[in-house]
Length: 135
Ligand SMILES: [Zn+2]
Ligand SMILES: [Zn+2]
Image (tube, rainbow, N blue to C red; front, side, top):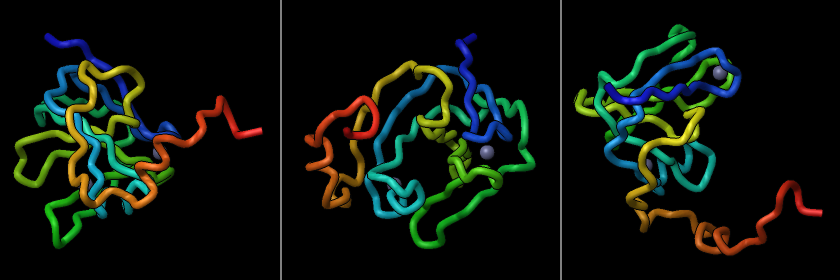
């Protein structure tokens, strides 16, 4: 029996519990992940499809399947936050790391689709670190 950690969307409408037994952790820099997150990359944990239990708000989940590349996103219909989903082939559960309320058992393994990373990504890692907004 593995430890469980909770997760959910920003507005709190959708919540879940997942076994803290992740196998892989990728930052995906592909163009589709950048679009869907509106950010530099997705941060996705992979585990077994049956490792999750939804604890609230399943009716607020909406799924989008991108037609060209095997690519899916599930989000909260109230606040738009990314949520876990099972891959099309049914073999893995993908959990957006930012949706977790606690620390996962593993650290990121790989930056995938590295060649597609944003033109400003490398510079951004060197930018000033501020506690809040810059003064
Ligand atoms: Zn929400
Ligand atoms: Zn991607």
